[in-house]
Image (cartoon, rainbow, N blue to C red; front, side):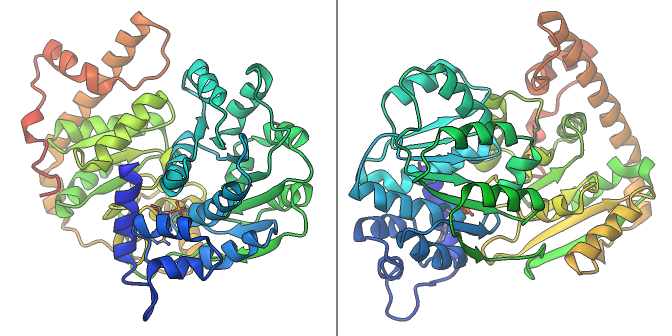
Length: 462
Ligand code: AMP
């Protein structure tokens, strides 16, 4: 919970005093109809004033309306749906009161953390039901009859089918968070199953970054006369974000990445790659060059993903190399720079990726690496955001000075991956290829190469 508090406090600081003249944070939340105890919790988290989505959604939800909210992660939407749920729970406490469906495990965990942080003074019990984690431990958590359940649809359905005593017969609130993404990830069948067993007289909230046809269909199927609230209706990027591109030959891509990181040294950075192997390889490459990097991608076990994220959040590593798994929903407030090592194929993913920086009024920087093969995709992104990006200053000669070192580190990274995969293949079937770090030293020893661990902070936070 301390993580959630710390993050919230830093957001609140970034948003300024916010409470308005003569208005205390607590009063600012009470003005929306939030009861004193919960307004106090919000203030304790360092929330100085409600965010826009909270201002719009909370009063409607407290009035008992269904709400469809168009808002992205970082807007404070979790607080917007959590505060009214907790308020009603205070009035009529009961187990299995609310269910929040989230597209990813990481987001589910973060939502539960916010519920816990807001509900700490009212004795809230919550449970997280996500894949990749032992079912039994989750069944035990359900046995404690939590008030709020946050989960990914597949695992929730699993428990509804297999965990004795768990049902949604008395559910009062259903939240579909990041609905566009839930639907893109083909969770439709699971959501249908959940809707079938949830009572009709429940209240429903649906939050989505975009209003797609599928989302509209889902809205019609499960919301009653919803009030629509909207914070950012189209794909825009904030003005505090400096957006740049580097036009480069594909064969020198890694070299330019290392150059850019050296130029941006001292910044925390998320590097996005298109594939899991791309994330692994770049994380290894950078580590071989003494950068403190850690990967996060869909082929890693849940425990490893959380481990990576925590290393990054705690500042132990300053570079997170991620696939789009990590581009949405993750609450990483302190990112200075987002680098698109691969241009996202879907231009909307660009907006989600760069949304990891310049959050809550802070400034930030995004750098997109564009090769001769990516020009069209890049132009589609500029068209979507309605902005022309500026070039990232570089001296080709200086970049190419790095070439030999980078090529060697890249060759080594490829060997490390190969070796990790074959070792894991020998131990068990080639799944969860996420042990690069663990096996790194062993492999290097075998290869007679030294892992430059001691240099890890050279390019770190300073
Ligand atoms: P979300 O969009 O719900 O993922 O929230 C993003 C971050 O904003 C989280 O770390 C919240 O703790 C924080 N937050 C939510 N509401 C507020 C607020 N009213 N003031 C400051 N920070 C907030």
